Length: 281
Image 1 (cartoon, rainbow, N blue to C red):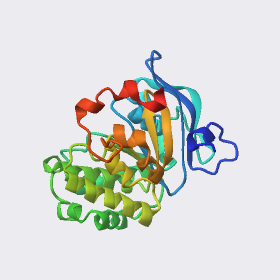
Image 2 (cartoon, rainbow, N blue to C red):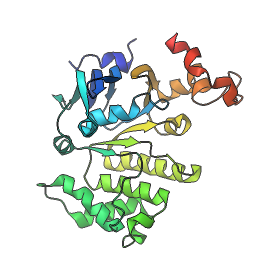
Image 3 (cartoon, rainbow, N blue to C red):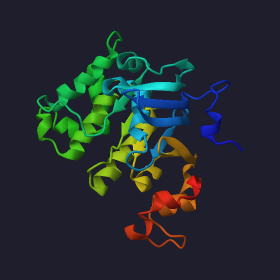
Image 4 (cartoon, one colour):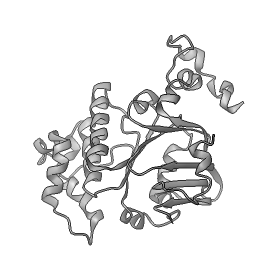
């Protein structure tokens, strides 16, 4: 039976919202980062991209959102389809109009603006469309009550968790159909991560927003996503429904740090995982 990655090789007859088909990405026309990557995201789903540093996860999101162009990157082969139309190498401002919004890694907020002013910036992506900003703010505050309390606070003084909530809230102000999340758990405590991921689940359910999540923390990611792709050196090496991946011995050993008998393994035992991974053999 073909995996989703294999099925995404051809866009014909697919009813998925987003598909990447044998995509190659180069930076400065020299550095090849994505090497024929294929995936698909169905409307209303929550999909994860797992992998270590340098695997190509963030580049994948930037290829979708058009932000590659800001870093001298370009899709040099393959195609990216959204609602049956090609969007690869479109300008970021045009891709945003499709309803694709990226929440960048590193909590990039406007530190000198207040929380409410930052949120209002998100509504600019809907320029030309009739939006009730007051209702949109109330919707964001429903998911993130702490932002209502901090609405007049200068954003640069927020905690890391509050800034992450602000970024997601700002993205919601743009009424995204597809939200791209790059390492939302980075630098946060386990308790905060659990809370934010639960809110993401509520947003998916309540707003019908499709989520594509990049995470190094496989345990956290697999608690939220319905389907996941494992990316190594610019390629999808494994993909499947969450439950099947949780039972996969490679995932247990190399991403969850568990041995075959369920015991947590030390870093010393798994540090050479790239050389030993069965899916790369």
